[in-house]
Image (cartoon, rainbow, N blue to C red; front, side):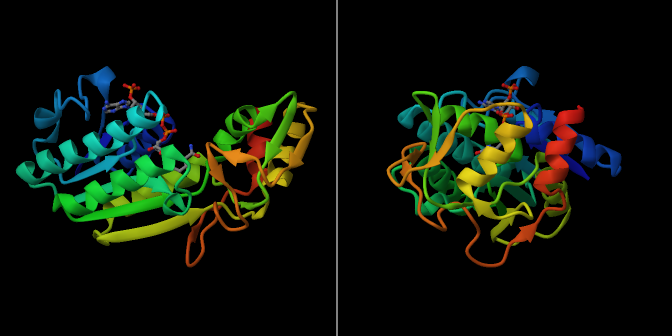
Length: 250
Ligand SMILES: NC(=O)c1ccc[n+]([C@@H]2O[C@H](COP(=O)([O-])OP(=O)(O)OC[C@H]3O[C@@H](n4cnc5c(N)ncnc54)[C@H](OP(=O)(O)O)[C@@H]3O)[C@@H](O)[C@H]2O)c1
């Protein structure tokens, strides 16, 4: 099967291309560095020739509110138009658990717009909504640090390892389209501050971490269940303890 991975050079995309290739598929990484730009449309038509499945794991270079909205909306529309013309049978995209629940988070708003454009495009699709990647916990801590203290909202957190995200996306790409959404998360659920503290201590970072009801997650208020799956979810295999051990060893 020919599977085009848009964003195939990224954290998730590079893992996905490797997994699909090992499973015997023609998995091709497409992104600006290979001459394929989902926002301008450059290189898209040629890259899509003969593609059975497209997986979109792009990320926006700028998270400024208008820029990130334009990125996800325009790229999803362009991909949809070109995939209809190319006869693509399944479009898979990676979104975020609860993105519709945090309207002050402008990145999440852009992901909701991406999902709406996918649903409107007319290509059979599956949207995989993941919780935050374990690889992103350090970035969350940094962006939540005020005056040397990490301030996090009073909610639950259930991060997933990038390797698990890639495995589930590969399985999704090879399965029939759901024309719907599936939530995925890691196995460990705990308070946001507790998981971030465990991560920071494991990398030798002594920054204090506090729960603060007024703290925002990229602009959004965090309530108890804002960032975790509310119903059924596929659960990754890699625990936080295993991931922290791997991260320390390598
Ligand atoms: N971080 C989290 O916790 C989290 C949680 C749930 C879902 N997600 C979603 O996961 C997705 C993938 O994230 P990631 O961390 O793997 O991303 P990443 O490592 O930042 O990689 C981004 C990819 O997008 C490509 N790209 C950028 N501009 C492009 C364009 N105009 N056209 C085509 N490709 C373009 C990049 O290509 P070049 O290398 O050529 O620039 C790169 O391959 C994102 O959509 C994000 O919303 C993230």
